[in-house]
Figure 1 (cartoon, rainbow, N blue to C red):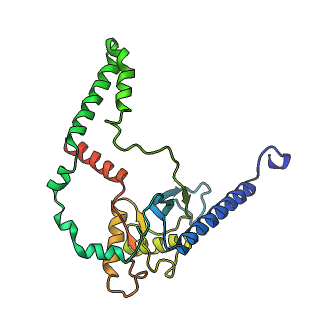
Figure 2: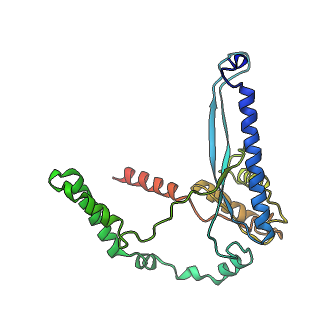
Figure 3: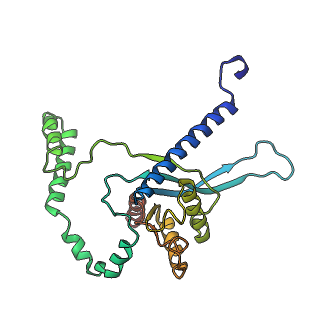
Length: 257
């Protein structure tokens, strides 16, 4: 069909995708380099494992179905960050202060605005009643206005689209310590980050529970290395992604109840 001009050839489509990918990665490296020049690094990555089951359609001797696995990552621009937020020297100083010793379950509970939580839960129940009781249908506009009021909208994010760029996948197994180390180094290289660029800056990498555990194992095993870059001291995994913690909580509730 491509010879008659009715469709695009597979090679043409792949060449177009390769061109778009190279152009986007060049823009990403330029943005990273501009940030490094001003003493900041405002990009983070979110990674996870990927699998693809390659079924053999042409059965021949020595050919069999194969499960291919690797690691994929997406670079995300962190906006509205305070100056010096990614300073590597400030981070260990704060860790050595050990202010987190004062953190407890009671202090976390005291930080929750329980009055707001109770009012919001009650409003949700009223919303359900208004939706399913025909006699209360005329109150839907009033309930919607209450949800949009300043009392209920504690922190409303402005309509905004995050700047993201997909990175090339690799064949590393991110749940293994060495595999995670090689995967992170590969993603850093794609972004144009090396030892000199990250000499005094923090690099944030996020993922699910197993990914974050592998990152902390890397930092633990290489803690004696004198180089910040080779010891991954500038690697800061904030914690498991919120979608993974919610999924774990949902599985726990389903299993226990």
